[in-house]
Amino acid sequence: MPDNRSESIIDNQMLNRKIVYAINKAISDDVPQEIRENRLETNNRHIFAASDYINDNLRKHVVKDEVELLAFNRYAWEGRILIDRANRVTYTISTHQTLRTIIRKNRNRPHYLQSILYAENSDCEGSPKQLSIGDLYPDFVGSSFDAEELEEDYDKIMQGSISKADGYKHYIIVYTSDHHTISDIEMLLLDKDFAEVDKISLMEYVNPDFASLTESGYDVTEEQDEKAAEVRTLPLKLKPGVKPALRAMEEEA
Image 1 (cartoon, one colour):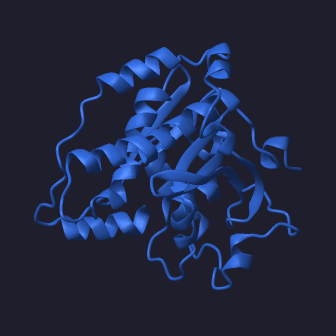
Image 2 (spheres, one colour):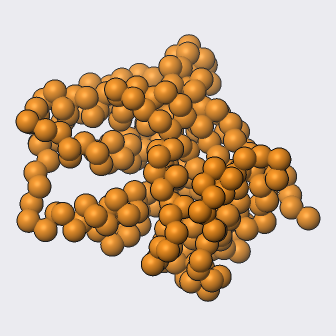
Image 3 (cartoon, helix red, strand yellow):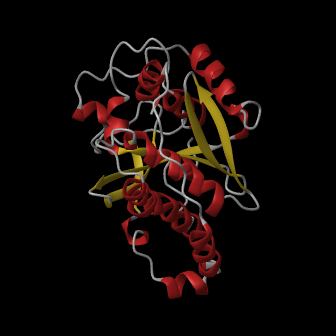
C-alpha cells in the first residue's frame, strides 16, 4: 500500500519560499541585469543563462543545514539537484516547456528525470481522473528503458549520495516566464510515467510578504546584503566547439 508521501506533496513552506526566491531573482533580476550591462547585437546566450543563475542562487540562498545541492554532469550539460535530508525529498527545477519536451519518443538515452522518477516515485500512481502528460501528448509512450538501465543511470546521477532504497520522493518545480516575469510556478509530484499525482501552486511566493518572511525566520537582511555585494559576470562568449555542447544542453535541459 502506498504511504501518504506517495500520494501528496510535503508542503515545506519555508523551503518553498527560498526556492522561489532563487528562481524569481534569476528571472526578474539577474538575467535582465546581465543583458543591460553586457548588451550585444543579439542575446541568444540567455537561453541557458537563467538556469545558471537559478543554480547559483540555490547555492547562495537555499543551501543550509540539511538542505544540500548535488552537482551532476550529463555529457556537456551540468545539472543540480536540491536535497532535503530532513524530509527525504529531492527537487529539480524546469520550465513547463522543457518538461513537455522530455516526452519525445525514441530517446537513445534516459533523460535524468526519467531515471529519478523511476527510482524515487515508482510507488506513486497518478489518478486516472487527472490529466497526465500522456493525455496531453498522445505520442508519449512512457519509458522505453528497462529497470536496470534506469537504476544504473540514477546511481550515476546520485554518485552514492542517495540510493533507491533510501525512500526519497522527487518533486519538480516548474515555471513559465514572460518578459522576465514569472507567470506561473508550481510544484509537481509525478509518478514514473509522468502522470500527475499531486501539485501545489507556488505563485504566492513570487511576491512574498517580507513581514511574514521575517517572522518565520527568513533572513531578509542577509539576502539584501548578498544582493548588494554581488559582482556581475563578464559577457558570455561562444568558443570553438560550443555548438555541440549547446546541442547536448538542449537535450538535457
